[in-house]
Image (cartoon, rainbow, N blue to C red):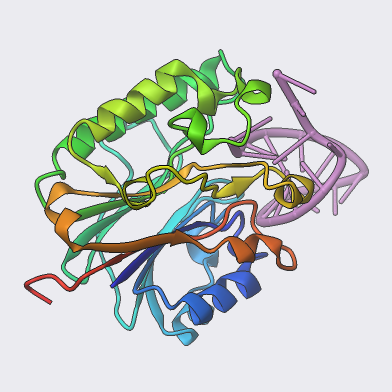
Amino acid sequence: MKIASFNVNGVKGRLPRLLEWLDEARPDVACLQEIKTGDATFPAREVEAAGYGAVWHGQRMHHGVAILARGEAPKEIRRGLPGDDADSQARYLEAHTRGLRVASVYLPNGNPQPGPKFDYKLAWFERLIEHARTLVGDDVVLAGDFNVVPTNLDIYNPWPWRFDAVMQPRTRDAYRRLLEQGWIDSTRHLHPDERIYTFWFNADAFRRNAGFRMDFLLLSPSLASRMMRADVDVAHRGRDKPSDHTPVWVELAPGSGA
DNA sequence: ATGCCATGTATTACATGA
């Protein structure tokens, strides 16, 4: 069973790339971020024609997350994180599919730093940590764009980006505390020493392979023994009109209930 | 230290992204 995450940077403009990737990669579950469209304008018909059921949490112009499942409709469990009723940004969606609880996560970018956007990022991260604590005992995948570069192995060159929100000690500390609950960064776990990137700032940065690793598939401890392979579909970043992120995926062995 | 760029929405301009 293949679980994937893909920050599409606009699901409508990216539809040809998305449908092509679904056809080629055939993920069983695909979590999308930055769909950048409202609930009424998500291209559900096209996604369904590609063989995927979907749930989505849209927002006009910005953010927005979705969960796709091949051949079935995911059952939505929650949209938005608990802890702040005034937070109207669409960055979290949780659904049940294929015997798992799957969350599509789009953590705030947080730039410029310092400032209110960085404060929002840290507060959002704390709410994610609190909610994740309630999930870590089940079969759960937290998949998404976490907007954090966990270590200097996860970026081509930390120096030019040392003031960026994704590099800050407080951002990294929040991510470390999330993982301390027991979550497994599957890509890093299976490739402990490799330089692996999932985001490139622009086409020139991609040519130089000057990337960041910020998209993760975090597995709850109960799924650890089912982890088989993990990789990044790097080639999709080099195609026509690509997203700035590239898909990441992990393959799980069938569970006892599947 | 960074959006020259891309995206979407609504108008030729703005907000967002990392």
